[in-house]
Amino acid sequence: MSWGTELWDQFDNLEKHTQWGIEVLEKYIKFVKERAEIEINYAKQLRNLSKKYQTKKNSKEEEESKYTSCKAFQTTLNEMNDYAGQHEVISENMTSMIMAELTRFVQELKQERKTNFHEGRKTQQHIETCWKQLESSKRRFERDCKEADRAQQYFERMDADINVTKADVEKARQQAQIRHQMADDSKGDYSSVLQKFNHEQQEHYHTRIPAIFQKLQDMEEKRILRMGESLKSYAEIDRQVIPIIGKCLDGITKSAESINAKQDSQTVIESFKSGFEPPGDVDFEDFTQSMKRTVSDTSLTNTRPDGKSEPKIPGKSRGKLWPFIKKNKSPKQQKEPLSHRLNDFMTSKPKIHCFRSLKRGGATPEDFSNLPPEQRRKKLQQKVDELNKDIQKEIDQRDALTKMKDVYMKNPQMGDPASVAQKLIEIGNNIEKLRVEVQKFEGWLAEVEGRLPARNDNSRRQSGLYETQNTAPVNNCAQDRESPDGSYTEDQSQETEVKVTPTEFDDDFDDEEPLPTIGTCKALYPFDGENEGTISVAEGEILSVIEEDKGDGWTRIRRNEEEEGYVPTSYIEVYLDKNAKGAKTYI
Image (cartoon, rainbow, N blue to C red; front, side, top):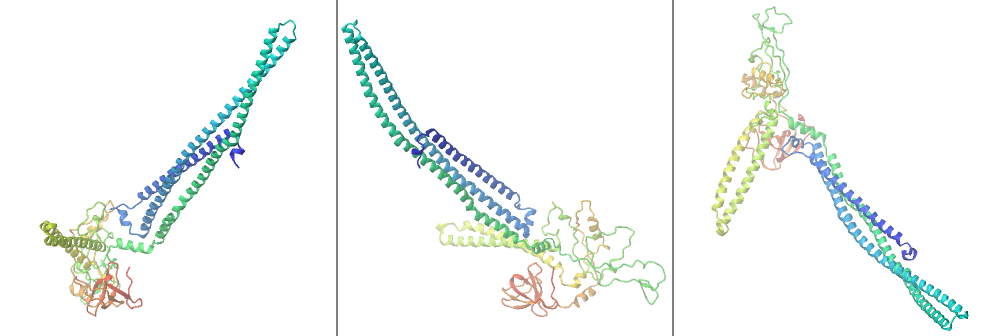
């Protein structure tokens, strides 16, 4: 089917239809443009949302990021950021592959349509001009024929009239002949113009117009096909990012599956564990000693042979009291001397911290003495590790400069060795300063590790480190706890020291049985064991394990019945016997 043959007389309708087709294409371009704007705005909002909930550096949220649930959430935010990037890709591809191409194509269509219809109008004007010429020739021929007929009738009347002179008759005859000649000329012209018009009309409706309409048909079909291709590209642009979006969603799912509630619970323990031991049992305090009454069978005192009552001294089962328990501050309550109540206390005790320095905004001491023992140990160990890394960096820099100095000495044209010497001196000084800092923090760390009680030592578990009912310094700490703002206070100038009989204290540990073996281990690397409490091992040596790693990176081992100590857990490969007698699980 061809527009030229089927729609030869629908020039105006074709003009309207092709204009409508271009408007449809422009409408589709506008739709794609708005879709691209939606995608880019959506991507921008997703990025802003992801950025809003990202963990801020040097903030409390950064500390919370060690939990698996928080890590999964951060992974989700990162994946959403990548997800937003794919929507930006959609917007960019739609703008470049559809909008820009179709806009250029529409301009070409408009130009082509304009050219074709301009040519069609010229053809229309030409056939109309030919038609007008034909009509003019026809009217002239008709007029000349009528004039010739009237001239003939006039000549015949003159010729029949006897009263008319011969000259008038001859004149009328000549006039009739002239009119007939003009009619014959008009007839010839009319016939010639008619033949020409028929030829032009034949060319118009069978050659020129079909060719123009065919171009318009090709243009319209090209527009339709191009729009179909654009719709296909529209879908393909979305389809191309589906795999990447799927990977983003898979990443979110994987991060969700990586959440470990037990691990987060263990992280809570590691974050907030203070290192203090739970308080022991509270002993009964006999206040009837001051009463002057007869000793009965129900008396809580012992009777000596001389008839006097002997005060009951608490036994070794006395335990420590939790340092933060509120106590009765009534002045009427009478206190017994410390020597009657603390027979099994250690000879010296650390300072009691009430943690006022833990309030927000307080200055942190350099030795982290404001923290509980376990948290202080972790902070000190972290500081030692950081300083060792700084020392290693300085050593690497010193080695590099030393090599450069050697090169300069061998090849003076490359540089002056003296220019490196000053820098080497500065680096040496920095290394010495850092080593002094390491020694300082290692001293504090050794002090903390010496104070931390062993969790499998029952005698230490029952020993009283803090007493809140008999000592004024601890009393003050309990009173500070009741501050109006609800925060802890600390008086680091107060230190409680309780002296007891050394003999009884030593007897408690002399009777202590050695820890049972709970497995074996193999040394993967040699360890010098220079620090107090550690033991040296050789690579490949087999030893006994008597205490598992409690989360601090150290395992307690024994070489023989008399030689034992701690080694780094990463230096050994442990084989625990779960059924071993005496094996314990530490929480």
